[in-house]
Length: 138
Image 1 (cartoon, rainbow, N blue to C red):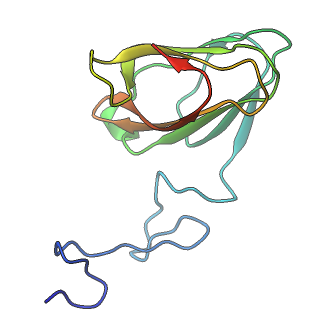
Image 2 (image 1 turned 30 degrees about the horizontal axis):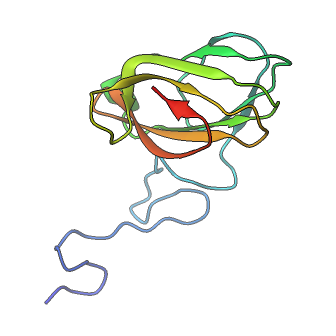
C-alpha cells in the first residue's frame, strides 16, 4: 500500500503553490502560474528560450524561429499566442514532436484569429507539443 503523498506507482508527489515553488523548495521550471512572464513579439526574428508566454502582435504574419533547447533548458515551457489576427509562423526545423507519425515537424502556422495558441515543453533536446488551439503543425 502506498503511503500518503505517494501515488500507487510509488513515486513521491511534488506539490507546488501558485508561484511554482515545489514542496521541496525548488522552483518548478515548467510551472503554469499567474506570474509567468508575457513577452510581446512585434517583429520577425528568433524567440529567446525562456519560460513564459510569447504573444505575436505584429501587424502582418510574423516569421519567428525557435532553436533547439539545450539539456540545461529541459523542462522549459513556452506558450505562443496570436495577439493579432494573422497566420503567424513559428519555425523550429525538425524539432517539434506532436505525437503524430512521420517524425518531428518543423513549423506551426497559427490560424489567422486572435487566440490561436501553442504550448511546447523542452524535452530531450526537442520541443514536445503539450497543447495547441487552431492552426497547423507540419
